[in-house]
Image (tube, rainbow over the protein chains, first blue to last red):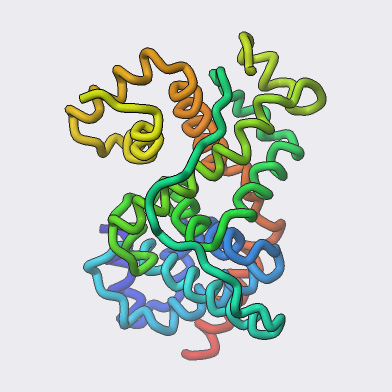
Length: 208
Length: 80
């Protein structure tokens, strides 16, 4: 196994190999920090700190989980710590956190939705729309959505990285996904002209 | 097993992940075949997930990788 072998060699003194170990995951680490911090510079600083902490603590890594899961959980903890710090500075720590209670959520019911053209993503406006929707999610939903749907972690890996049960991951994921649908589906489906007109043109049929 | 729309919405995430039991899956599919609202909710959710999984949704800052490895190199060299 690639990671296990590299880790063994790094711990054995070939520290330069750490570059190769983390290279496949550096984007994922940035995605994790950015999705929580929502600021490029902060996210990059947190990503760098994550990697430095991983290097310093590599001896504590236990092979029961995947290296990538361990690394991302460091990234999430680093970002959470920065968010907590920022909240304390803003005297904003009483912000109410959402709960994991079931039920009551209604998605946006649009009458038709077919094909989504991926090339539309090259359009800045759509990217911004997606990022804004993700940014508007409460932190606990943003984390699961990022790990499961952006980084494509399994439910079990997501649970390990976040330190919660698989049941909690599933509940949060349902809320996160339906919230994204509720925010985005009407915007994507009803834009009649301009940059998102492509959706309409491609999909055809009725959107209403 | 007959499901209403709310039951389907409650299962939609597990359904997308393919983790619902066969009997429930069949009931969901029967509902979807007759309910275009739920079918649209499913399609739109799925498509939004495809969009957010795309690499281009989160751009990486220019020079991120270089700066990251430079700072790692400093740490690696410094602790030798």
